[in-house]
Image (cartoon, rainbow, N blue to C red; front, side, top):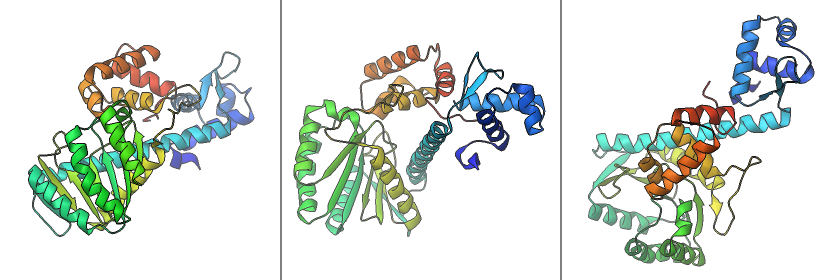
Length: 323
C-alpha cells in the first residue's frame, strides 16, 4: 500500500509488525514475517534512512518505530519534495532543449536578443485576456527594470487580468524590490516569495509560456512555448510552487524540529554538490551569505563534507532517502 510513497513491501511489513509488536527483536521479526534475518536488517536500514524508525537502547531490535500518523505525514512530505524536484528538472530540461533546438515550430518559437524578446513579450501581453503567472528569480531586481515593468503591469491589471508573481525570499531584504512589490500588491497583483525557483518563466492565459534558453543570461534568448502538454506541465509547476510560497507580510515557517524551508533546500543543494556561487544564485543572495548559510548547516549536521552533510540530512529526516 505504501509503495507509492517510497516504501518497499518488505520494509512496510517490518514497520507494521514493529508497530504491533515493539518488543520483537530481529529474529522474532523474521519469524513473524517468514523472511530471513538479513532481509529484516536490510529493511531496518531502509526504514532508518527514511527516519521511520529511530535508534532505541530499550528495544530488542535496536529501533523504535515512528507513530503511523507521523510516518504517513513524513512520507507524503517527501513525495511532495520529489514531485517538486521532478517538476523543476522538467522546466530546466525544456529551457535546455530550447537552446539546442532553436528553430520555430508549431509548438515553439525562438527569440534572440533582448530587444526581440521585449517586443514579443509586449505583443503577447497585449493579447492576454485572463491571467499571467510569473517566476521571478535572481534576488533583488535593478531599479531601472522595475520601473520599466510598471506601465505594462498596470495596463494588464487595469484590464482585469489576474497577475500572480513568485519572487525569491531574498527580495524581502531589498528596498527597491520591496517598494515595487508593494506597489504591485496595491494595484491588485498577487505576490508571494519562496526560497528558490527553478527557472525564469512567464505563463499567459495558461496557453503560452516564455522561458529563457540560457538560465545564466535571460537576455541572450528565449523560447515561446505553445504546446498544450508542455504548458499544462509548467502550469502545474507554478501552482505547486505558489501553494508552498509565502505571502508578503507572513513570517518564516519552521517545522517541528526548528528547520526552515530555506535550510532544507540548501541542504539539498549541498547534497547535490552545488558550489557556493551556484547556491547564491539560486537563493538570490551574495556568495558570502551562501557560504555562511552552508557552513552553519554543515556544523549543525556535524558534517565535514558536503557529501557527509547529505548523508546526515537523510538520516536526520531533513531530506528524502534516495533508496
